[in-house]
Amino acid sequence: MNSEAQVEELLSFFKALADANRLRIIGLLAQQPSTVEQLSAMLGLAPSTVSRHLSYLVHVGLTSARAEGYYNVYRFEAAALEQMARRLLARETLPAIASDVDMDAYDRKVLRNFSLPDGRLKSLPMQRKKLDVILRHAVELFEPGVHYPEEQVNETLKQIHEDTATLRREMVAARLMARDHGEYWRVGAE
Image (tube, rainbow, N blue to C red):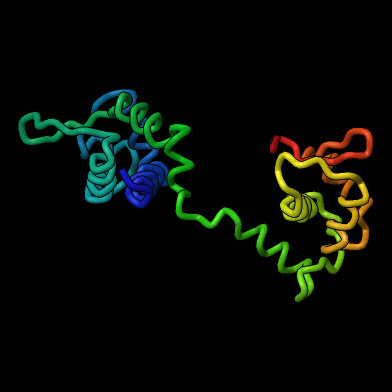
């Protein structure tokens, strides 16, 4: 099922549960199967209103109907609710729903807001979340698997900001770079 179909199915499922009268109907049907007329009397709603709600609940699979004489008897489908919740809210389903979202949009926005036209930084952000974006950008200046002396790290970082000590320290603290005996390297890149 593609992400658009999953979104539509999730919306239908939650829409079914997002109405107080439908929740009351489900609650009553969870206790015992009932007809439209019985539900109408218990809820104080017009039979046409109850029928409309039941139609929607049948459509999403939360209730079912079987004919008994002149009446349809509705019942709550607990197993369908459990199966639907398990399938729609599965760990692999929810991320797939957002598969067409631009995950790097925030990073680009932060970089744009803190960068000058020449690519250098105007300033270092105070907010940790924004600083992390800058640090992820800065670490890209270094090749994976290469050890750099501190002087070379400073020269490289000066390309984007004068405060190389803060950038170095923060990249090490964020575990983007490691340091040992005056040498720096990208973490996880060796």
